[in-house]
Image (tube, rainbow, N blue to C red; front, side, top):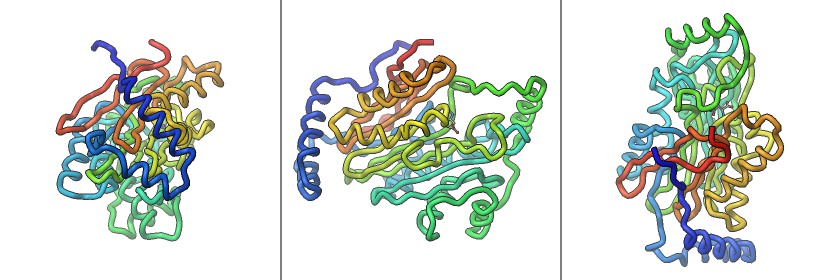
Length: 332
Ligand code: SD4
Protein backbone atom coordinates (compact mmCIF):
# COMPACT_ATOMS: atom_id res chain seq x y z
CA UNK A 1 0.00 0.00 0.00
CA UNK A 2 1.31 3.39 -0.92
CA UNK A 3 2.35 5.24 2.19
CA UNK A 4 0.71 8.56 2.63
CA UNK A 5 0.59 11.22 5.19
CA UNK A 6 -2.14 10.66 7.71
CA UNK A 7 -3.68 14.09 8.04
CA UNK A 8 -1.37 16.68 6.75
CA UNK A 9 -2.93 19.78 5.46
CA UNK A 10 -0.90 22.90 5.76
CA UNK A 11 -3.97 25.09 5.87
CA UNK A 12 -5.53 23.11 8.68
CA UNK A 13 -2.22 23.14 10.53
CA UNK A 14 -2.03 26.91 10.50
CA UNK A 15 -5.68 27.25 11.58
CA UNK A 16 -4.95 24.87 14.45
CA UNK A 17 -1.88 26.89 15.35
CA UNK A 18 -3.90 30.09 15.40
CA UNK A 19 -6.59 28.56 17.57
CA UNK A 20 -3.94 27.07 19.84
CA UNK A 21 -2.27 30.44 20.22
CA UNK A 22 -5.59 32.05 21.13
CA UNK A 23 -6.31 29.30 23.65
CA UNK A 24 -3.02 29.92 25.44
CA UNK A 25 -3.91 33.58 25.86
CA UNK A 26 -7.52 32.96 26.96
CA UNK A 27 -9.19 32.49 30.30
CA UNK A 28 -11.25 29.34 30.81
CA UNK A 29 -14.55 30.95 29.88
CA UNK A 30 -13.03 32.58 26.81
CA UNK A 31 -11.70 29.19 25.68
CA UNK A 32 -15.24 27.88 25.41
CA UNK A 33 -16.17 30.93 23.37
CA UNK A 34 -13.31 30.32 20.96
CA UNK A 35 -14.42 26.74 20.40
CA UNK A 36 -18.11 27.56 20.11
CA UNK A 37 -17.38 30.35 17.63
CA UNK A 38 -15.80 27.95 15.14
CA UNK A 39 -17.29 27.82 11.69
CA UNK A 40 -19.58 24.73 11.69
CA UNK A 41 -18.32 23.82 8.23
CA UNK A 42 -14.92 23.33 9.84
CA UNK A 43 -16.21 20.50 12.01
CA UNK A 44 -14.86 17.05 11.27
CA UNK A 45 -17.19 15.12 13.55
CA UNK A 46 -18.78 12.80 14.52
CA UNK A 47 -15.70 10.63 14.24
CA UNK A 48 -14.22 7.46 15.67
CA UNK A 49 -10.52 6.57 15.51
CA UNK A 50 -8.87 3.40 16.79
CA UNK A 51 -5.43 1.83 16.85
CA UNK A 52 -4.80 -0.91 14.28
CA UNK A 53 -7.03 -2.37 11.62
CA UNK A 54 -10.22 -2.85 13.60
CA UNK A 55 -13.02 -1.95 11.21
CA UNK A 56 -15.65 -4.04 12.99
CA UNK A 57 -14.84 -2.25 16.22
CA UNK A 58 -15.05 1.25 14.72
CA UNK A 59 -18.24 0.26 12.88
CA UNK A 60 -19.81 -0.78 16.16
CA UNK A 61 -18.79 2.50 17.80
CA UNK A 62 -20.13 4.47 14.84
CA UNK A 63 -23.43 2.59 15.02
CA UNK A 64 -23.72 3.44 18.70
CA UNK A 65 -23.13 7.13 17.96
CA UNK A 66 -25.76 6.93 15.24
CA UNK A 67 -28.23 5.50 17.74
CA UNK A 68 -27.60 8.54 19.92
CA UNK A 69 -25.53 6.76 22.55
CA UNK A 70 -22.81 8.74 24.32
CA UNK A 71 -19.26 8.93 23.01
CA UNK A 72 -18.22 6.91 26.08
CA UNK A 73 -20.70 4.14 25.35
CA UNK A 74 -19.65 4.14 21.69
CA UNK A 75 -16.03 3.54 22.73
CA UNK A 76 -17.04 0.75 25.08
CA UNK A 77 -19.20 -0.91 22.43
CA UNK A 78 -16.39 -0.62 19.87
CA UNK A 79 -13.66 -1.98 22.13
CA UNK A 80 -15.92 -4.84 23.25
CA UNK A 81 -15.87 -6.23 19.70
CA UNK A 82 -12.13 -6.82 19.92
CA UNK A 83 -12.26 -8.01 23.53
CA UNK A 84 -14.64 -10.76 22.43
CA UNK A 85 -12.61 -11.68 19.35
CA UNK A 86 -10.77 -14.89 20.29
CA UNK A 87 -8.50 -14.57 17.25
CA UNK A 88 -6.95 -11.33 18.52
CA UNK A 89 -4.02 -12.35 20.72
CA UNK A 90 -3.52 -9.06 22.49
CA UNK A 91 -6.93 -8.11 23.82
CA UNK A 92 -9.57 -9.85 25.94
CA UNK A 93 -10.29 -13.51 25.26
CA UNK A 94 -7.45 -15.15 23.35
CA UNK A 95 -4.88 -12.69 24.68
CA UNK A 96 -1.39 -14.15 25.02
CA UNK A 97 -0.65 -14.91 28.66
CA UNK A 98 2.11 -13.83 31.01
CA UNK A 99 5.06 -16.16 31.51
CA UNK A 100 3.09 -18.19 34.07
CA UNK A 101 0.30 -18.82 31.58
CA UNK A 102 -2.19 -16.31 33.00
CA UNK A 103 -4.13 -13.91 30.79
CA UNK A 104 -4.22 -10.60 32.66
CA UNK A 105 -6.04 -7.60 31.28
CA UNK A 106 -5.62 -3.82 31.64
CA UNK A 107 -8.28 -1.33 30.50
CA UNK A 108 -9.43 2.20 31.15
CA UNK A 109 -11.93 4.82 30.05
CA UNK A 110 -12.15 8.61 30.28
CA UNK A 111 -15.22 10.69 29.61
CA UNK A 112 -15.79 14.31 28.64
CA UNK A 113 -15.78 15.44 32.27
CA UNK A 114 -12.26 14.14 32.77
CA UNK A 115 -13.56 11.23 34.85
CA UNK A 116 -11.43 8.10 34.68
CA UNK A 117 -11.83 4.47 35.63
CA UNK A 118 -9.48 1.52 35.20
CA UNK A 119 -8.84 -2.11 35.94
CA UNK A 120 -5.31 -3.48 36.08
CA UNK A 121 -4.06 -7.03 35.82
CA UNK A 122 -7.57 -8.47 35.97
CA UNK A 123 -8.16 -12.14 35.12
CA UNK A 124 -11.12 -14.18 33.87
CA UNK A 125 -13.40 -11.34 32.74
CA UNK A 126 -13.83 -10.86 29.01
CA UNK A 127 -14.81 -7.18 28.97
CA UNK A 128 -12.44 -5.17 31.17
CA UNK A 129 -13.39 -1.91 29.48
CA UNK A 130 -16.98 -2.24 30.68
CA UNK A 131 -15.69 -2.98 34.17
CA UNK A 132 -13.46 0.12 33.98
CA UNK A 133 -16.56 2.22 33.25
CA UNK A 134 -18.25 0.78 36.34
CA UNK A 135 -15.17 1.52 38.47
CA UNK A 136 -15.48 5.11 37.23
CA UNK A 137 -19.21 5.41 37.80
CA UNK A 138 -20.05 3.09 40.67
CA UNK A 139 -17.12 3.17 43.09
CA UNK A 140 -15.40 5.91 45.09
CA UNK A 141 -12.11 4.90 43.38
CA UNK A 142 -10.53 5.21 39.96
CA UNK A 143 -8.40 2.04 39.77
CA UNK A 144 -9.08 -1.53 40.89
CA UNK A 145 -6.39 -4.16 40.40
CA UNK A 146 -6.06 -7.92 40.33
CA UNK A 147 -8.37 -10.03 42.47
CA UNK A 148 -10.23 -6.97 43.73
CA UNK A 149 -11.05 -5.90 40.19
CA UNK A 150 -12.25 -9.41 39.35
CA UNK A 151 -14.40 -9.59 42.48
CA UNK A 152 -15.90 -6.21 41.69
CA UNK A 153 -16.68 -7.33 38.12
CA UNK A 154 -18.41 -10.47 39.39
CA UNK A 155 -20.39 -8.41 41.91
CA UNK A 156 -21.60 -6.30 38.98
CA UNK A 157 -22.88 -9.37 37.11
CA UNK A 158 -19.90 -10.25 34.87
CA UNK A 159 -19.25 -13.95 34.59
CA UNK A 160 -15.87 -15.56 35.10
CA UNK A 161 -14.54 -17.38 32.05
CA UNK A 162 -11.32 -18.92 30.85
CA UNK A 163 -9.62 -16.41 28.55
CA UNK A 164 -6.71 -18.65 27.52
CA UNK A 165 -7.59 -20.15 24.15
CA UNK A 166 -5.93 -23.26 22.77
CA UNK A 167 -4.02 -21.13 20.24
CA UNK A 168 -2.67 -18.80 22.91
CA UNK A 169 -1.78 -21.76 25.12
CA UNK A 170 0.18 -23.28 22.23
CA UNK A 171 1.94 -19.92 21.71
CA UNK A 172 2.90 -19.85 25.39
CA UNK A 173 4.16 -23.43 25.32
CA UNK A 174 6.26 -22.68 22.26
CA UNK A 175 7.64 -19.55 23.97
CA UNK A 176 8.65 -21.53 27.05
CA UNK A 177 11.14 -23.54 24.98
CA UNK A 178 13.45 -20.52 24.79
CA UNK A 179 11.71 -18.28 27.34
CA UNK A 180 13.36 -15.30 25.71
CA UNK A 181 11.48 -12.11 26.50
CA UNK A 182 11.51 -9.86 23.48
CA UNK A 183 8.44 -7.73 22.72
CA UNK A 184 7.66 -8.05 19.04
CA UNK A 185 7.18 -4.98 16.88
CA UNK A 186 3.69 -4.82 15.35
CA UNK A 187 2.66 -8.20 16.65
CA UNK A 188 0.17 -9.72 14.18
CA UNK A 189 -0.70 -6.29 12.84
CA UNK A 190 -3.45 -6.05 15.38
CA UNK A 191 -2.87 -5.15 18.94
CA UNK A 192 -4.05 -3.29 21.97
CA UNK A 193 -7.13 -1.35 21.02
CA UNK A 194 -7.21 2.31 21.93
CA UNK A 195 -10.28 4.16 20.69
CA UNK A 196 -11.39 7.81 20.70
CA UNK A 197 -14.89 8.95 19.73
CA UNK A 198 -16.48 12.35 19.25
CA UNK A 199 -20.25 12.56 18.98
CA UNK A 200 -22.27 14.93 16.82
CA UNK A 201 -22.13 17.59 19.52
CA UNK A 202 -18.34 17.51 19.72
CA UNK A 203 -18.22 15.56 22.99
CA UNK A 204 -15.11 13.36 23.31
CA UNK A 205 -14.47 10.14 25.23
CA UNK A 206 -11.85 7.43 24.98
CA UNK A 207 -10.90 3.93 26.06
CA UNK A 208 -8.01 1.52 25.88
CA UNK A 209 -7.99 -2.24 26.48
CA UNK A 210 -5.26 -4.88 26.25
CA UNK A 211 -3.87 -8.14 27.50
CA UNK A 212 -0.54 -6.34 27.56
CA UNK A 213 2.73 -7.68 26.34
CA UNK A 214 2.90 -11.39 25.67
CA UNK A 215 4.93 -13.37 28.21
CA UNK A 216 5.36 -10.40 30.53
CA UNK A 217 6.32 -11.00 34.17
CA UNK A 218 3.45 -11.87 36.49
CA UNK A 219 1.91 -8.68 37.84
CA UNK A 220 3.27 -6.46 35.06
CA UNK A 221 1.04 -3.52 34.16
CA UNK A 222 1.61 -1.48 31.02
CA UNK A 223 0.51 1.94 29.88
CA UNK A 224 -2.89 1.08 28.47
CA UNK A 225 -4.94 1.50 31.64
CA UNK A 226 -2.90 4.33 33.15
CA UNK A 227 -4.30 7.82 32.81
CA UNK A 228 -2.01 10.13 30.84
CA UNK A 229 0.03 7.22 29.48
CA UNK A 230 -2.19 4.90 27.42
CA UNK A 231 -5.09 7.35 27.30
CA UNK A 232 -5.93 10.96 28.00
CA UNK A 233 -9.05 12.97 27.23
CA UNK A 234 -9.53 16.70 27.74
CA UNK A 235 -12.86 17.59 26.22
CA UNK A 236 -11.79 21.20 25.66
CA UNK A 237 -8.70 20.25 23.67
CA UNK A 238 -8.77 16.68 22.39
CA UNK A 239 -7.70 13.15 23.21
CA UNK A 240 -4.95 10.64 22.60
CA UNK A 241 -4.35 6.93 23.06
CA UNK A 242 -1.30 4.72 22.60
CA UNK A 243 -0.16 1.29 21.56
CA UNK A 244 3.23 -0.37 21.68
CA UNK A 245 5.81 -0.87 24.39
CA UNK A 246 4.00 0.45 27.45
CA UNK A 247 7.12 1.01 29.51
CA UNK A 248 8.25 3.70 27.06
CA UNK A 249 4.83 5.34 26.89
CA UNK A 250 4.63 5.42 30.68
CA UNK A 251 8.04 7.03 31.11
CA UNK A 252 7.07 9.92 28.86
CA UNK A 253 3.40 10.18 30.00
CA UNK A 254 2.72 10.00 26.29
CA UNK A 255 -1.01 10.57 25.86
CA UNK A 256 -1.06 13.49 28.26
CA UNK A 257 1.90 14.95 26.42
CA UNK A 258 0.08 14.72 23.08
CA UNK A 259 -2.99 16.50 24.46
CA UNK A 260 -0.85 19.22 25.99
CA UNK A 261 0.97 19.70 22.69
CA UNK A 262 -2.40 20.11 20.96
CA UNK A 263 -3.30 22.66 23.64
CA UNK A 264 -0.24 24.60 22.54
CA UNK A 265 -1.49 24.65 18.97
CA UNK A 266 -0.06 21.54 17.35
CA UNK A 267 -2.23 19.49 15.03
CA UNK A 268 -3.00 15.93 16.20
CA UNK A 269 -0.44 14.55 13.79
CA UNK A 270 2.27 17.02 14.82
CA UNK A 271 1.59 16.33 18.50
CA UNK A 272 1.78 12.53 18.01
CA UNK A 273 5.03 12.96 16.11
CA UNK A 274 6.63 15.09 18.81
CA UNK A 275 5.64 12.60 21.53
CA UNK A 276 7.12 9.73 19.50
CA UNK A 277 10.31 11.75 18.96
CA UNK A 278 10.72 12.23 22.73
CA UNK A 279 10.97 8.45 22.99
CA UNK A 280 13.21 8.05 19.95
CA UNK A 281 15.58 10.72 21.24
CA UNK A 282 15.81 9.18 24.71
CA UNK A 283 15.99 5.48 23.87
CA UNK A 284 19.10 4.05 22.31
CA UNK A 285 17.23 0.87 21.43
CA UNK A 286 14.16 2.41 19.78
CA UNK A 287 14.82 0.18 16.77
CA UNK A 288 13.74 -2.79 18.86
CA UNK A 289 10.27 -1.65 19.85
CA UNK A 290 7.19 0.04 18.53
CA UNK A 291 5.18 2.93 19.97
CA UNK A 292 2.30 4.61 18.17
CA UNK A 293 -0.12 7.36 19.12
CA UNK A 294 -3.46 8.35 17.65
CA UNK A 295 -5.13 11.63 18.53
CA UNK A 296 -8.07 13.90 17.77
CA UNK A 297 -8.54 17.58 18.46
CA UNK A 298 -11.66 19.54 19.33
CA UNK A 299 -12.57 20.00 15.70
CA UNK A 300 -12.57 16.25 15.13
CA UNK A 301 -9.35 16.33 13.10
CA UNK A 302 -7.35 13.17 13.63
CA UNK A 303 -3.69 12.23 13.36
CA UNK A 304 -1.23 9.51 14.22
CA UNK A 305 2.47 8.72 14.25
CA UNK A 306 4.56 5.67 15.06
CA UNK A 307 8.22 4.81 15.48
CA UNK A 308 8.13 2.10 12.84
CA UNK A 309 6.17 1.31 9.73
CA UNK A 310 3.50 -1.32 10.06
CA UNK A 311 1.19 0.58 12.37
CA UNK A 312 -2.23 1.48 10.99
CA UNK A 313 -5.24 3.28 12.41
CA UNK A 314 -8.93 2.91 11.57
CA UNK A 315 -11.03 6.04 11.14
CA UNK A 316 -14.81 6.17 10.78
CA UNK A 317 -16.00 9.54 9.50
CA UNK A 318 -18.72 10.73 7.13
CA UNK A 319 -20.11 7.19 7.01
CA UNK A 320 -16.79 5.79 5.76
CA UNK A 321 -14.71 3.26 7.65
CA UNK A 322 -11.11 3.45 6.44
CA UNK A 323 -7.71 2.13 7.40
CA UNK A 324 -5.14 4.89 7.44
CA UNK A 325 -1.36 4.46 7.20
CA UNK A 326 0.28 7.13 9.33
CA UNK A 327 3.78 8.46 8.90
CA UNK A 328 6.46 6.77 10.93
CA UNK A 329 9.96 7.72 12.02
CA UNK A 330 11.82 4.64 10.94
CA UNK A 331 10.93 2.49 7.97
CA UNK A 332 11.58 -1.13 8.81
C1 SD4 B 1 1.27 -2.62 26.95
N1 SD4 B 1 0.79 -0.91 25.33
O1 SD4 B 1 0.77 -3.35 27.78
C2 SD4 B 1 0.46 -2.25 25.74
C3 SD4 B 1 0.65 -3.31 24.71
C4 SD4 B 1 0.49 -2.88 23.33
O2 SD4 B 1 1.14 -3.12 21.21
O3 SD4 B 1 -0.05 -1.88 22.99
N2 SD4 B 1 1.08 -3.59 22.44
O4 SD4 B 1 2.42 -2.20 27.04
